[in-house]
Amino acid sequence: MTSSHTPSYPQDSIGVLVGLVRGEIVRKLEAEMQAAGIELRFTQFLILKRLALMGPMSASELARAVELDGGAMTRQLDQLEGKGLLRRLPHEQDRRALRIELTPAGDAMWQQMTPCNEHVLDAAQKALNPTEREQLRDYLVRVLDALRDMN
Image 1: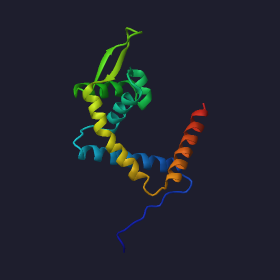
Image 2: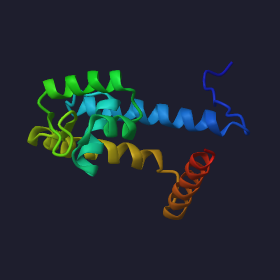
Image 3: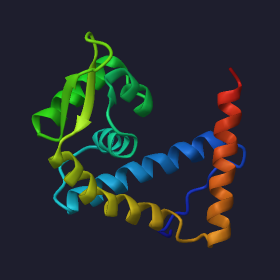
Image 4: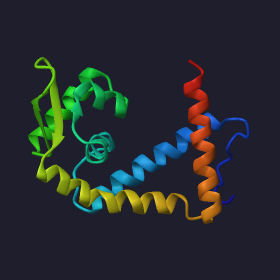
């Protein structure tokens, strides 16, 4: 008996494959960040990434952007605020709402996490040439658009 086992992936299950790829990206990115001394989880990475790339936003906008419910978002924001990576400020137009923004420490953390993210994504695509990488991106965008158009 051989101990090496090549997993088989069902031909008709794109959902399973997409889920497996996402799971591996999450695990690898968390491992890369930990190796770099960054003690954050993937969801916290996503929150900082959204704020870094999209700028300040309300907690509900941020929750939608990273696909979290309100309670989970509040817990994540509490943790990140406790680490000094973001702050909640009064919203300019709606005094009932808060605006979430990165602190300078949060921006510095984003700069530190970016190479970890790039390394994992490059490794994930190393078997693809530049044309195939662009095709994969195009296919995934089209699948996402088709799913969003269902509603």
